[in-house]
Image (tube, rainbow, N blue to C red; front, top):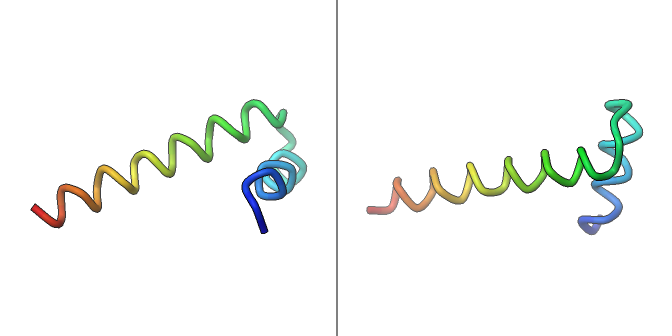
Length: 41
């Protein structure tokens, strides 16, 4: 599954727009990345 497919699935399942789904995925990815970077310091 690529990002576009994930966005489409999330939008459909959550009843939100693809733009909103993309923002949610980007926010989640950023939070996980920052947390992992902090954990490795």
